[in-house]
Image 1: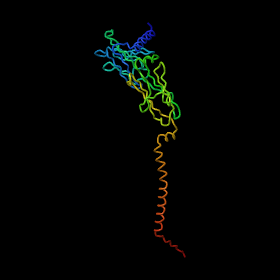
Image 2: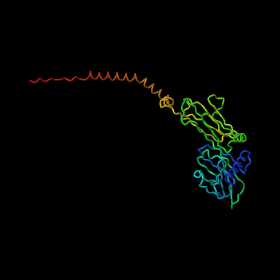
Image 3: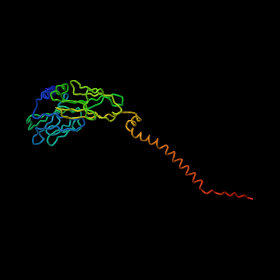
Image 4: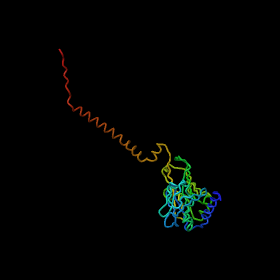
Length: 286
């Protein structure tokens, strides 16, 4: 069987298991935000990890990551992978491309022991349509749950009771009833979009995307708005109180300075009048 056919067959088997819920000994769904570290458990491990094999499957790849306890060096994930003492698979600095199904198997003398343990990794990732934004302009934020479900996301979300939604800085869920926000959940894909027009007070404001399963928060990603305004407007918007104090001090200090100058001048004149006068003697030469 060719590698392409083998990859397609494995993909169909894992996808069917993902959607129907049929699985091996101990399947798991792990949700993680991009940039974080994750641990994927292997619950069929034997007395040591010399029999452990970790395989990875997605729509575009089928890779062997760990073979009999040793990392494979010909993978892009090599530097970010490590095997825990309990044979769990540790991945550092998760990227959205790391989503997929990870299968843990045990082999002794070339024969598989027990059944597969599959861990489905879902990566939550937030991005923006703009690199530079300012007050008065609009911004669009994309929150994507990268998952093996792919185009079958609607069915998977419904069966697993998974929800994607945005919340504001106070933790209040944003809804379509708020006219300031345009929220769109894409059909067939796990993406929820937030569009809004920025106000002056939105500088450094946070919006957070949450993913829940059966009403329990599994992961979240926070996006902080950094508006690119002119120097003067930034100073005025960030430090209005300090500027106001300086202006008030200048206004009230001016009469005081003038009064002190008058007092000093009068004192100087008084000292000059009390100072003994010098007598100059002109010598006439004969």
